[in-house]
Structure formats: C-alpha cells, structure tokens
Length: 296
Ligand SMILES: [Zn+2]
Image 1 (cartoon, rainbow, N blue to C red):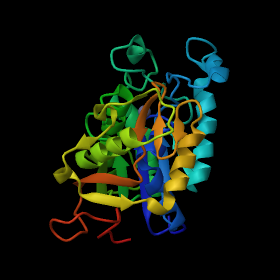
Image 2: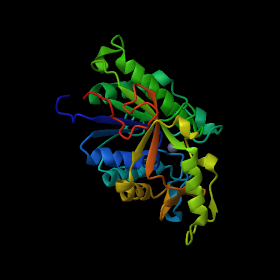
Image 3: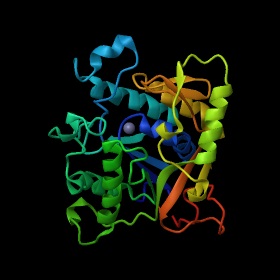
Image 4: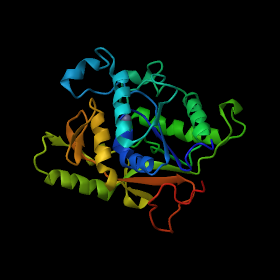
C-alpha cells in the first residue's frame, strides 16, 4: 500500500446522504488536503421516502428503484466533496435498507439489520486491510438516533476494526491492520441549541415547521466532545453534497429538511468523540485534526 497517501480516513455510514449531513465538511477538507478518504455505505437507502413528486414512482411500494437512484445521488455528492473512493459494503445492493425501527422490513431477508454482524463485517475487514486507515469515523452504539441500519453500521464498523487487527482472523482478507483512532459522530448540545435558535430567527425559509433537537443524531453534552473540525472553508461543498441527495434533502441557506419537511441547521463545524486511541491534543483541549498524534 506504498502508493496510498500518508493519511487515510475511513467513514462507515448506513445510507447515502448520512455522510454529507454528518461529515461533509470533514470529508471535503481531508480530500482537499491530500488524505485518502474512503466512504463505505452499508445500504443503498432503498426504504427512504422520496421528496420530489416527480420521482415518487421510485419508492419501495411503487417501482422500488430508489436504491439504484440513490447510488447516482451519492456519486454526485462525492464529486462535490472531492472524494473518489466510495464503496457499498459488499457491493451495491448486497445489504438492503431495513427501514425505521419496528417495521416489517427490519426482518426482510437480506436486510442489513437481519444480517449477522460478523457476516456484514467481512467485506469491511477486507477494505480495512487493503486501505489501512489510521482513522475510522462511525456512529455511537445507538446509531445516533436509533435507526436499525445506523445501529448495525456501528456494530459492523467496530467489529470489523477488531477483526481486521486480529492476526488470527482470515488471512485471505489481507494482512492484519490496527486502526489507530476511532471516532463517533457527535453534536455538542449547545451547538445544536444555537443552530435551532438561528433557524427560529431566520426569515424567508419555506419549511412549514422546525425539527426537534432530538431529531439530530448524536447530540450529547459538550464535555463528551473530544475533536472539532472547522469546516467553514468547505461549507459550500457540504451544502452542494447535501443538495445532490435530491430525493432526500432540501437545502435552504444554512438549513435543510428531510422528507418530514422540518427545518434543521447544517453544522459546518463537525464534532467527534474519540473512543479508541490516544488524543493528539493537550489534556483538556479538543483535537482540531483527526490525525493528530498519528504516526503515518
Ligand atoms: Zn441514514
């Protein structure tokens, strides 16, 4: 892997659009700085709701073509972020979107949620051992907000990180590799609160309502945040990537809405909690670089 850039970042997400909403600025920044950014998306998001009326026929209860359509949206988003290495776990369509918690699709054969964690981890082990990232970004154990595919993405990412490092695990998947630092996506509560305050004060927006702070994945007390990436320079790239997810997201100014049409702030600073590896920041301070302290 001597031909890979010195800094390598892996992100594991559940559906197309999660990467741009959560990490768009971080991905654009590291890609622009020459790091190798690998996005692994676990499902095609087949069970998503479709916003534009003209594309409503793609929905799972009609043509069921939303998954392949969202592959194209993700590719367009990655172009906006400058990320060239984006893959679907096990290949496009290997694991199907499981829908929201409690729906029948959770247990549908081939759904991501119904797949044993180790089965879904295998293709990720192979990617980890091939790309050899120093940094992994994924969700917390609740998936940020309880969606089954997000919970499963967390489990699969954490399990694959362990298995990839284990010299006794399946040599045919590549030479063992230990990821130096693992982060979970977070939003500090005070940042979420001021984002919603700005949304309430904004004029000219056409969203019929405003989301609840509990709709934002990964909101935690500020003390838990260990890393903060200032993505101000890449705000336009993040917004453009979010806009590329045409069936899922409507962007207005510094705000956006999902299919529920409720406004939410776009966070241009992105926040993380280091859960494995040593912080590269002085004690008590947030890291400003996910690779801080990493020896290439
Ligand atoms: Zn998602």
